[in-house]
Length: 450
Image (cartoon, rainbow, N blue to C red; front, side, top):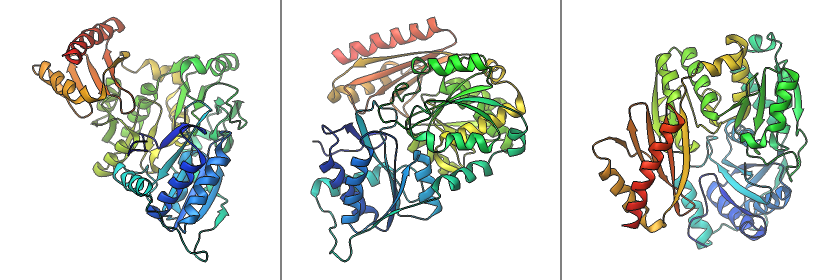
C-alpha cells in the first residue's frame, strides 16, 4: 500500500481484493474524523453497495458522525443534498463507469463540490497514521434514513430549465440508465418535463446485465437501434452514477461528449449574453469555436472535473465541463450533473430544432488517441525534454504538454495511475491527426529511450 489512496475520482478497487470491508471502515473513520458533524451517504446499484456503505457508515459513526443515508441515488443528488442542507460533507459509494466487480468511495466537500486534493491528503494522513477519532459509547454517531433528496434535487434542475418550452415541444426520448443510479431520478425527470420516455435498462442491477456502465458507442447499440426504430428526438445514456450524460441524435448517431459540450456551451453563453466557459486542455477546438461565435471566452485547465469546477468558481464562469459528457451548470451546482445536462439539452432542442441539425452545425475536427508506455520515474524528465524539443512551436504546459499548430493540436499527458503517456491529436482530418500522433510518438519514444 502506498501513501496515496485517492485517484482522480475517489478510492476504487476490486471488491475483496483492493477494496475490502476493513479498508472501507478505516477510511470511514478517517473521513468521519476529518468531516465531523452530519454527513450524507449514497450509493449506486453495485452488488457490493450495501457491504461497502455499511462499513464506511460504521467508520463514520465510530468518529461521532451523524450519518444520513440517502439510499440508491446519483452522485449529484448527494452533492446537492450536502450543500442544500449545510452538512459537513458527503460520501458516495460508486465506481462510476468501472466494471461491476469494482466499487469505490468518493468524498463530497461541504459546498457540494468534489473533495479537493489537499483535503483528500489530510484524510489519507489520518488513514495511514491511524489517528482516528473513536468516540465514547455515549458520543458515537447514529444513522438515519433521509427522505426527499431526489425531489429536492429535481426541483433545482427544473428551476434552471425553461419548463414551458420543453413541456410544450412534445418530445420523445429513449432513456438508457445502464441499470445504474440514474433509475432513481431520470425517468421521473422526463415525466415531469412531459417528455415521452422509452426506457432501456431501467431497473437497478449491480451486474449491469444490459451493457457495461461506461457509455461508449460500442455499449449503446440497443439505444441507437431504438432511437432509429421509434423516431425519437434523442437517446439519453447515463454512466453508473449518473453524473455524466451521452446523447444519440435523432438520426441515431452517437454523439461524442465534445459535441454535447460544444452545443450546450454555446447555448449557455448565448443565454448569459457572453461569459467564460471552463474546460480541460483535452477538449476539442470545436468547443472554443462555438463559444467564440456566441461572444464568449474559453479558459483551459488541467483534466479533472474538480479542477474545472473550482476554476469556474474562481472566475465566475457561466458554464464548464469535460468532453466525457460531464457538464457543470453553476447556477444549479458546481459538479458534473447528468440530469441537468438532460434537461438543458431537451430545452435546447425544443427551442432550436432537431439535435442532428445542431450536430451538423458544429465545426468538424477528428481525433486520434493512443498510449505509450513509460516508466513513472522518467515521466517528468521526458516531458521537460518534450517542451524543449517543441520550443519553436506554441506549447501549453497546463496539463502535460500540448503542442498547438494551425488547425489542431497534440497533447501528451502522463497517466496518474499507470506507467504510460496518453497521446491525443486533433486536426481537421483523421489522416492529419494520425500523422501528428505518429510524429509525436516517435519523438516521445526516442526521449524515453534516452
